[in-house]
Length: 243
Image (cartoon, rainbow, N blue to C red; front, side, top):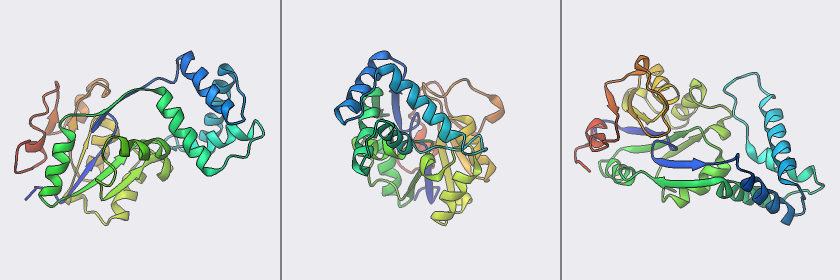
């Protein structure tokens, strides 16, 4: 049997390797063309400016620096600005298109699926706690083969706050009646994932990946993977079988 009853994972940079580019002129030209095809004509520059301003306006609605906006509100407003009253489905499809157009790379890390399978095989539960837009992430879970793999999911755009706010962790713990002493948090961000887990008295596994940023010894924990060798992940997670 696994060491922990509940395994909480971050998604991007931990289970999945992703690269997006919302800065290239080509991306904004393609995004503008998409809006234009749905009755909302923008130039690339106009769309980028409107998108940034609407995001800032949504963010300004809360004094909390860790407030997380919901981008579906921004996409809907971009249509309304051009006289279009978008149906919910169009907003959802626009979010998917926007993400696809900006994504350069998206894949599971090779260790991820086998480790998740082993956790499940050993009778423990799986949870996802991620700073992410639900309108992007829920479709991407399907693409990555992760849909239905988790017993519970907490995403920052749905919680209205992002890690390392304790509110998002508390929302997950309360929603599924989780005892932190029975949980381990795995993530690639020392502050957002590791320090947050420690704040709740929870064990944590830090996995250094390409998007982790610089290493801060102040957030060091006994369980760490650095340098790309992921062969010890099952051992550090307290799994009986090596992957």
